Length: 94
Image 1 (cartoon, rainbow, N blue to C red):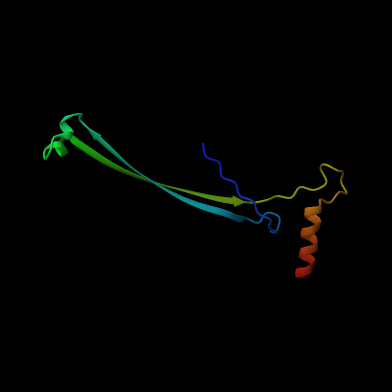
Image 2: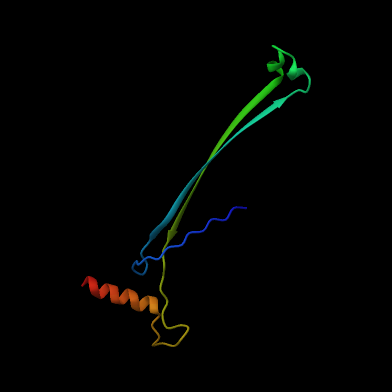
């Protein structure tokens, strides 16, 4: 099992989508199969061998769509610090 982690600090509006990261991995493998002893005979030994090549690509894209939930944990008037920061930033844009 492989674990990959990403960490970022961003500011996006509620419900906006963020492309957090993309990873591309390519794996290549070569497998050689042969008949013991016969494959070691000079000149004709290659007739008793088989090589196979495989290649695989894996791509991982992380999309994040946050939904800010307010007032549920600390009562109806509570404003989470992250939400307050977003409100302050949106005032700067006006």
